[in-house]
Length: 68
Image 1 (cartoon, rainbow, N blue to C red):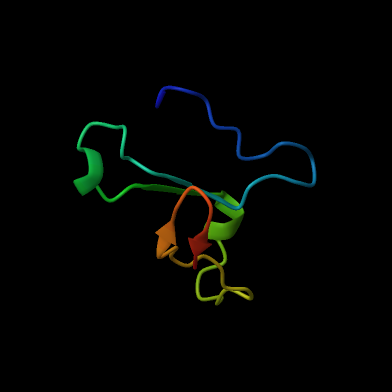
Image 2: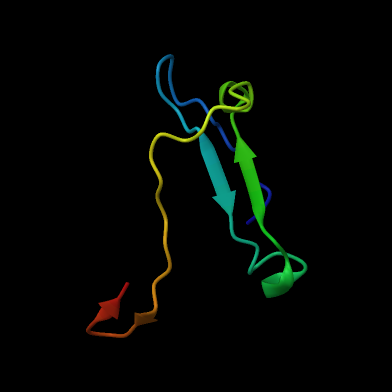
């Protein structure tokens, strides 16, 4: 559920830069925008553009195929 602790730092040198939570099971449902958690280190990099882009949208997912 939504009431769990999120540990952004899993060790001394590693961890998560950001975590996105999809709200489709939370109060507000599909119309709510979601939650983005970012690390303090990432927040302090104001004005620095990302070096790698990612993500995208999947157009179709079926039992035997998908299309990106």
